[in-house]
Length: 120
Image 1: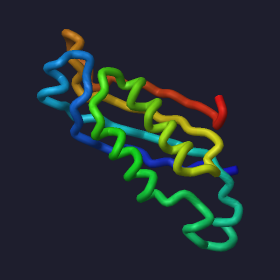
Image 2 (image 1 turned 90 degrees about the horizontal axis):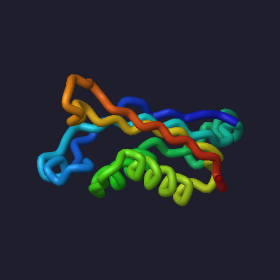
Image 3 (image 1 turned 90 degrees about the vertical axis):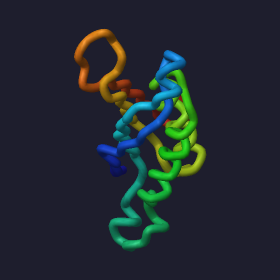
Image 4 (image 1 turned 120 degrees about the vertical axis):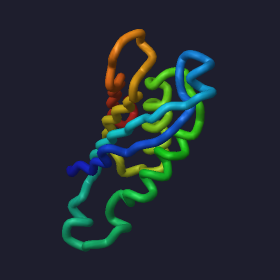
């Protein structure tokens, strides 16, 4: 088994519990680690034997473009889409962060992390 991580992805999106947040938007971060077999890619040096980072990014971007009230919902949708598009992925851990969340005080980021094995 092996791991592939995309770290520090940034998006401007329209998520949030409050209606105002969904109108004005905010900056969000995504970190994702997936587990899959990398043995063949390690020996064959072929993109078809691994997870294409660009395709993984496109899935994340597509889900980030759909407004949600909760970071948990975004993370769950991304995990479902990754499992659906990459049958060889066995495990995913994803963190979604919201920069400067409206909590009534200073907070650089609010972060939600979810993880799931295929068929959990």
